[in-house]
Amino acid sequence: MSRLNYKHLYYFWVIAKEGSIAKASQILHLTPPTLSAQINTLEDMLDVKLFKKSGRQLVLTEIGKITHEYAESIFLLGLELENFISNDQHQRQIQFKVGITEVMPKLIVYRLLDPAFQLSKDIRIVCQEDKFESLLTDLAAHKLDLILADRQINPTLNIKAYNHLLGSCGITLFADKRLATKLKTNFPSSLNRQPFLLPTLDTVLRRAIDQWFDEQGITPYIVGEFADSALLKVFGQEGKGIFCAPDVIEKEILKQYKVEVIGRTQAVKEQFFAITAERRIKHPAVHHIREMASSTLFNLMG
Image (cartoon, rainbow, N blue to C red; front, side, top):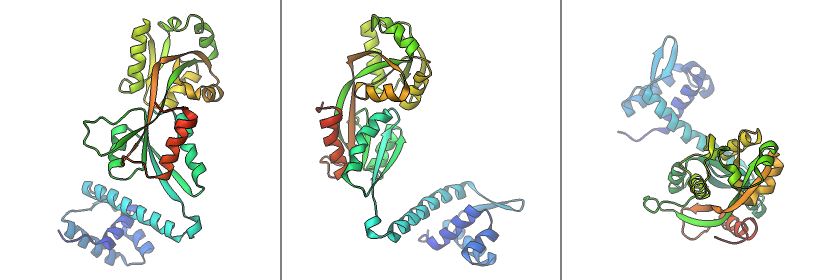
């Protein structure tokens, strides 16, 4: 296959975006026949059909859709570069790209990332929430500077990345006032057969909670399981059941969700990690986050 001609690819991208050669020709200031010829050249070079006719409309073929996704990434990234270059030097921001696992408590994420803003006014934090494995793939491809997670990397994974423990803490159990008032007495045995909102089974926290239930002889009545920690808390706020959160953000939970504390335990530990592509932390924002986490949020490492 001949080397890709990005001018032809750009014409294809504009046509796909506008939905017709006529509209694209007005934007590109080219005649429709010229554009048609350029697309034919691109299709011949790729040896595929990118468009097909549906009545009077041009629609993308299956391979055309995939090609459009790649073109979209290429040219949107180009526009981002243009915007960056066009800014004055003193206005340019340093991007700090952070991947966040879905189960990470959002208040913990905020407390961890806030020091990065104190480091520089010129930093722009870009947060991406996804599953742990997907984030690791992006980290390996250098699309992320940091992952915040509640677990370490499995050493069996063939990914060059490193764990940096930020800290650990116990958990606090919360519920709306009606339920909390009833369950504070005789905690934790009072929790037996009570409604619970829990993280999903594939999480580290869920496994630790289930073990604690077994040790305490508690049989929970599970009314909901959530991958998203924020959504779990909203259901708890509305009185649907008991939920837990790291004890280091207890005050923020009480203020934001208007719930009450049932009890606390150090028998269930949550650990939080910064995961980077380098063994020795070099990014100043990551270094500052780690220092502040150990000195303020968790008080001491481990």
